Length: 464
View (cartoon, rainbow, N blue to C red):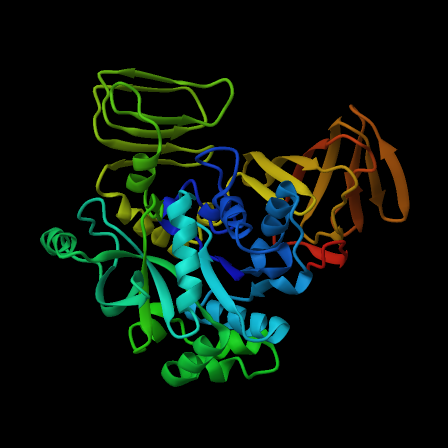
């Protein structure tokens, strides 16, 4: 079985933990592995690395590569598909399935979102074996048996049983249902409906035929010579609306294991361990902790010492540049905050104070009207692009490691405590030739300090 992992979502409902350039599939808010890494590990249960494909946004290329590298997993370059812009799930899945078909011929493909939490057990493996048996004749979706009425999920009404001998492999899909209100959700659960998990399995030939039949505008877009043009023409549409709700070949295989799409902070509260007062606490800094006085049933994720007094049923998310306080049960509305930030062109919708790059990371320590101070960390053997800025000068001070610095035509080595100055308009580069992480304090001074004031002349990572 081939695996197609979808890793292009922005995770706007988990702001400020999740940002455009660090969406939830790459954030490690549960333990030391990202949701993307957990998805790759699930994919490896059924597929070799050469049979795993990832569709992601071009901005996330190096997040994907870094997470794969930590797992010791190397995918062929052609297996990582970089979308120029997000257009929902159907264009992403169509491109991925088409690519699998071109490389391997007609194959069974399982589609896995990379931002869900799923318990892998015998029931999980059995469901995928059954789906593989049905995938030549059906577009299979996986249905989660509801644990309670839930208004945040779509539902599937199962139809006739599909059997292999006396064994039931799955059911035809009688109907897909939109996210219901609470009373309707109760009726769905009582009537044996399943939650729609957003996971699928089908043969490439059957999916491509059904896409041609029900979403010809998507198929036509991908006949273009360039992916950029294909995504320009492709509609913004989900696989559910575009194909699954129209086809007469949909089937559902029950998946009786723990599943959570982690689509809100209320969902995250569900999965985290609670203390004796029902508080779910995750402190992400070594020297910080939570003190609670008469505080119950709260979700608190923080980077600093956090104290609460007399509060209940709150969501408190504290990052280094933003604080979210919300009532439990209302966290679906967090995406409205993200929209406001985007309208204001506030970069806090896009990036944390710490931003990750293929060479390492930088953290904004302080900024004012005409200055910005950063801490750069450069991984051993890595170097920044050969670049120039029009509007700012930079002063670098080495804190740890050894820096190889080019300023204009001069190249020097800097050790801890040593520094150099780069005037605006001068070509320069920073490199870590050593064996330990290089740390540099960078002070920027100028009339414009945006990240887009970079002209690259050379780059090891193929960036523009």
